[in-house]
Length: 94
Image 1 (spheres, rainbow, N blue to C red):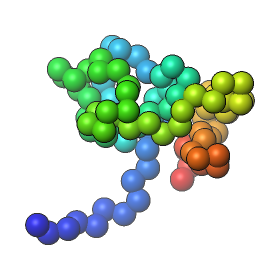
Image 2 (tube, rainbow, N blue to C red; image 1 turned 120 degrees about the vertical axis):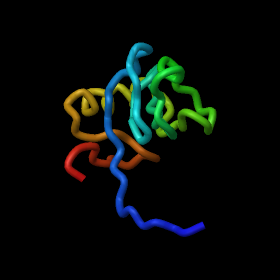
Image 3 (cartoon, rainbow, N blue to C red; image 1 turned 135 degrees about the vertical axis):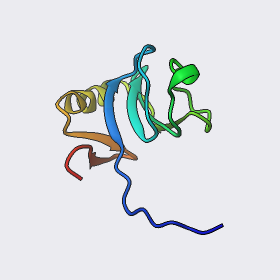
Image 4 (cartoon, rainbow, N blue to C red; image 1 turned 90 degrees about the vertical axis):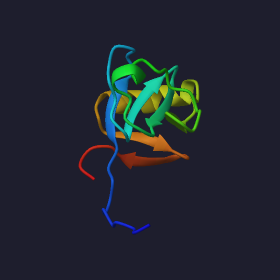
């Protein structure tokens, strides 16, 4: 199979997960205090699939860190950054 170079892929941040919303691949949502990224398009009959770390629809990006995580969520609400293994990564403007 031929490989196609597509360059950098930038995830889209969508905020809190909503069951009535369709999500395209590489969309980051917050669910239960944790951040998840969609692995594939969740549209049509897949709309409403709740984020769990199943490796098919969603992958865990950052687990809820309790009090410490609340500080990060304030930043997420402003669209500035989200945590990944203790480091801050820009969500917008990459």
